[in-house]
Amino acid sequence: MKTFPMGGVHPQENKLSRAAAIEALALPDVVNIPLAQHIGAPAVAKVAKGDKVLTGQLIAEAGSFMSANIHSPISGTVTAVDMVANGQGLRQMMITIKREGDEWVETVDRSTELRKQCDLSSQEIIAKIKEAGIVGMGGATFPAHVKLSVPPGKKAEFLIINGVECEPYLTSDHRTMLERGEELLVGVTILMKAIGVTEAYIGIENNKPDAIAHLGELAKSYPGVHVTPLKVQYPQGGEKQLIAAVTGRQVPPPPGLPIDVGAVVCNASTTVAVYEAVQKNKPLIERVVTLTGKSVKNPKNLLTRMGTPIRSLIEAAGGLPEDTGKVVNGGPMMGRAMVNLDSPVTKGCSGVTILSEKEAVRGVASNCIKCAKCVSACPMGLEPFLLSKLSRKKDWETVETNRITDCIECGSCQFTCPAYLPLLDWIRLGKQTVMGIIRARAAANAPKK
Image (cartoon, rainbow, N blue to C red; front, side, top):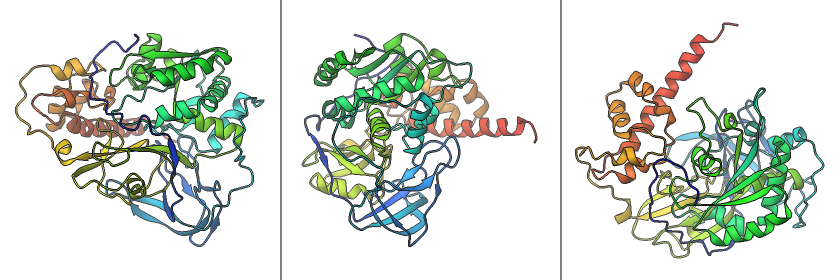
């Protein structure tokens, strides 16, 4: 069984909602739409307080090439363009809309008819994806049009679709592959055309045999599309790990990119969104979100409009359990704890995990016992304890030398540490600081205009 060659761990899967069919969540009365739902520059608001908007209407325009358009997920009246608290309690600019009915822009095809034929050129496809505001929906939120714009001197050789969903608890991609397999495969052919390749691989962990069988059967009608079963091993869904597992090729250290080894990787849900954007003129205004946890009454996969308060999803799954200790945006390995349940669903929100008080309590940290389990677990071949220690000491030069920017923040080191050291917390701080230093250095050395 294929897998990546280095590190990895095996957390308990807890795929409690794997059998829960996707349900459409009731439309929210009010949405808050962040202008920064993607990597890169925030979008620029194109509406003001008092404006009337339709579902699917452009309300914020990409602020640069590395940015993404944002569209209204509901119809109604803009009540504010102001700073609002996000899930971590930090205030950021959002557009607030009060719903009035559900009137859509006329250009969106809302029919369920499958449209296989795409007569657009590669540049026209990428332009449509850019207009629709598609970003990576697995959590990275990288603008899709940027990923598909192969740089001069580089050549794409194959497309990889990430259907791994290795994060414990989350099942939104799994259900999407099962219930929207045909749309996904048409999306694959569109992406293949956009980057000019004839081969595509859909990587799926072996704990989803139904998805492997379903897409494997459908793929017989799509030349050049292959379903690749993968070993269950976290973080199999990491971009570099997935490329290594499927192709055997190793992406170079930063600033190396997948395209340097001929690969372009897209998430399974993103691929369905690409189908909708290109074939149905539908912008990215909704997504499937897993709402789950061992104490959750009815774990669900909910088709949710962007901007919907997280609290509404929790209520739809039976309410907040009495023993709740922590609500996590994402899964327990890479997700971030939330302090504000009125914060909105965004393009990168694939799930919300509710942990009990017992699950949420961290072990008491003690001294490192020099077991090197964190080194063995790191899928990037780093020394997590060293990076953590250097970050605590603010030795940024040595931290950079020891490749902290290679870290994918998967949390394998912290998961495996018997001393319960907060390794990832310090490494995240160190990586963020070093990335800032690198950007400042690049700006200082840039040619003066």
